[in-house]
Length: 125
Length: 365
Image (cartoon, rainbow over all chains, first blue to last red; front, top):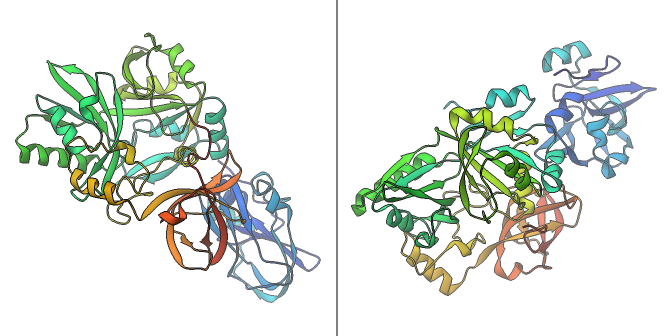
């Protein structure tokens, strides 16, 4: 089985992705992660305005069979939350790198160890 | 300890199954998607490999006495071809395991039984039967055949017709909790009209070596233990080791909501203790509940009163694919057990409102 690993973004060992656009870092989980979890049925995220810390858990994603913490790639303030995944958590399965995104962070400078796409591919191989 | 593999592990792997450890076995948890598998069983038909279930064969002049004195239900009432849900209790009436007892055709003029303990319990139950047989001086042969037989469940509204079309024998007249011998692709199997999903269907006991022939013939959606778990929760069926556990969550059948398996007019280990419980009533019992607030209840979460006092524990929980709502099972004091009663479930430190619902959560057969 092979999984999508887009090269336009960076990755955490804990299977989140981080994509910086115009100074804002968008965060979601990878294709591999959604496949491991199976049917996603619940996502818990912080509110806009809250602070997150690089490497710390900021939320939770639950599938029918498992509960998994979500880890922040960078520190900063939450400036966007994808409300769509609350009502339609299956978006995380259907389009993990696109419409299934979770959080947007205005980074304050600190970041955790981020992997390039090729390194992450090695990790999940 | 290495995991035991079901006979078709390789075949399931090729089919793309994901695996999980369960009761010491390496079992398929998901073939496609738990939701898809679940819905197919509710609407049509699916097949499960449940070869991790134990199979213990008991025969001999005192087979009926041995079975009757070690299980809580009324073994004397079983005629050839009947099956019965029962609990196996200790002297205090605490459930060690739950099981289905099948009365097989007589063997050499003696009664014969098969009982199916839960995954990983077969050796302990085999030992228990042998020990009590010796202590009571009974004459019976007790064989652990767990590694000799695979077990497949075919479940769903169309399960009966799928199996009926495959077997050489007629299945009309095989009612719920009845069994018959069938031949599928030349392989003789025991077919029992039982299951663990709330749907109609059969469970087939198949010789280990012929497992692939029979599995392949049962052409329909393969389903893993993930869907089996969500289906049984919706049906309000308890899972040994999770909704009760002899060590970590000791419960009587009355507390666990399976008091109907206890026949106090029979003699069995635990009977006297259970008679007292039956007279005095239970303090806590298993209830079904639905979470009103957003969140999903999971095994081990605390249940509290509205004021925040811990009153119980969640033993099973999931997002119900059929109801599209978070549901759970858990123990609470009897004064909280009436449907409509509200309490709280603590999900990652947050108190979520929950309401007691009648179980099963869905209409079952």
